[in-house]
Image 1 (spheres, rainbow, N blue to C red):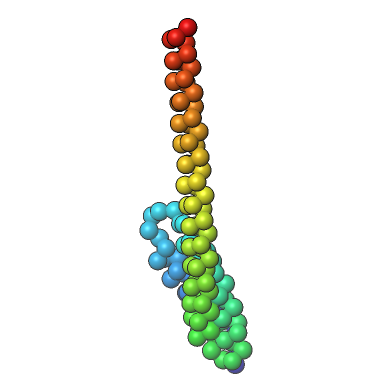
Image 2 (image 1 turned 180 degrees about the vertical axis):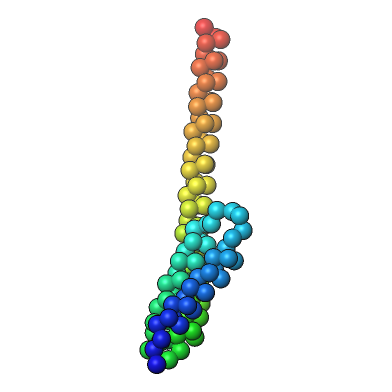
Amino acid sequence: MFKPWNAVAMILLFQAAIGITGCNGQPTTAREQRTITTAGFGGATGAIIGAAIGAPGAGAAIGGLIGGIGGFAVGNSEQNKAALQAQTQRNLQQHEIEQQRQDVQRLQAQEETQ
């Protein structure tokens, strides 16, 4: 028999467990945010599907695990892409600074020779 409160309780407990493990005092990264979000959605979806066959807890656990793994993979990819873009931007800025420094030195040299 489908008991919606059991499914809701399992989802809330699962999300609370994920939330507690993520409390390290630091801002969450893109990877952590994606993992937590997809694990929650996976758990909710799994609980609904599991309730249809009489096992909302097992469905929530399996759905949360699959969602969390998928979210981790996507979040990790997003975080790596963002880090690469930031590094590229820093390299471009450093190159521009170096060119401007060389321009200043060239102008100073021209001024000294005049």
